[in-house]
Image (cartoon, rainbow, N blue to C red):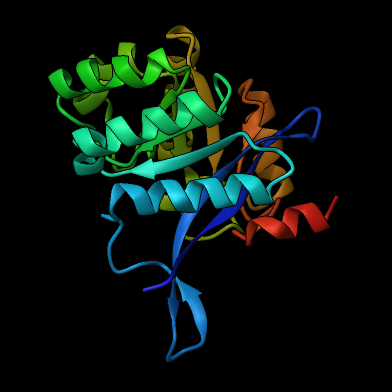
Length: 223
């Protein structure tokens, strides 16, 4: 199988600068002759690091985030190899690890401490939709960033956000501020989304309004 990290920018909504790129794993479909979401995200540690190294080399802004499953995050092999790579090749806060599901508290405490010692940031993805407050509240002291995925909740961009979604978003934006965590609004697709984010004091945004996931070289060509 052939894999590649595509990149999608996370933008500063005030300065319009790219803060970092989320790296999204894609797999080449030889039959359809196109890149698609992979059948599995559980790649060997050396493959993950090779793909990461290639993507960073292809990006002008080398601050990136990668998604890890609970199994990958808990892997001692990936922990050793990735922290070695970080020590040798990356600057503090250059890499963010996005957790698609919450690990156990002992794992987050122990593994997270090793990653954070390298200057790596840790994020919870999909708060409010896949990851609910009751499930992750006790884990918040051990992460740096929360990401709210608007695209997971609404079915159309033609209508205002339903009150329940708006209330959910306000809750998480407020919680991030209270906990002094970074907060990213994903799924931005319209100017109204940007206006809403600014009204809530949210300045980090991601979504198709800025760019679909692209091969990393695309963003160098766009400079």
